[in-house]
Image (cartoon, rainbow, N blue to C red; front, side):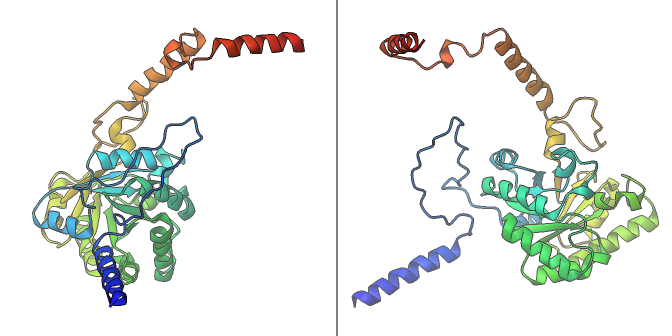
Length: 334
């Protein structure tokens, strides 16, 4: 009888765990003693009244015509900021090659590098839905290569979905990935990894041929199993027409405000770079982090050079007896 009770209790625990997201079902934390001068990383555990954003959440938003908010992040702090600000989706975009690693374009970044950044982001993003970009060279050779890269991104990067660039020509790879149970967001229109083939960063879908091709790409990725598609640098009326005639969410970037949601590069919209840095037309600076950060660093430098920092409020107190004993010891040693 006792054994049956134990089995019954165990099954209840297993059922409870299976109903919860793997991101929200966690073992209790043990108290740790930190031996570091750095402040501990803020907790990113979910509040009790919050639920993680899932594919079902995004689908419900889409069906209810509620705009989906997406923002890029490239490390723990930027992911934590995005989540705490309420972003539905956090994208570990290959744009980090340029804005975080100082590369000339997105084609330089490797899958290993993307995975490293994805792991950092996923540690912070416990509520937002996370997507990891598959970088150039990690999925174009074959659908088998695409699946292998997607598995690595999800398994090692700990994201919940992947994104790749391309339309009808990537349909087989998209189907291969989604058939393996990995959610995938497609990306059409301006595809930065192919900027050289496109003649640079140019508006897409602005002629009948290009608009028709864009729509065909959108239908192809939808039918291949993509749960959403990014439309980049597309005239608003064309993006709206595509959005109305497919059955998955469209996420716009430089595509007007009639798409199912929007995405921006976090560093761009925060104004983290100098004022004279190039910025695409579609970017709005919602902040001026560079200016405030620059002023703060200058203030720190001045405080150090004029010895106003650190001041008494930043000092640790000592026992006068210890100081006297130390002075006596030094004199004796001399």
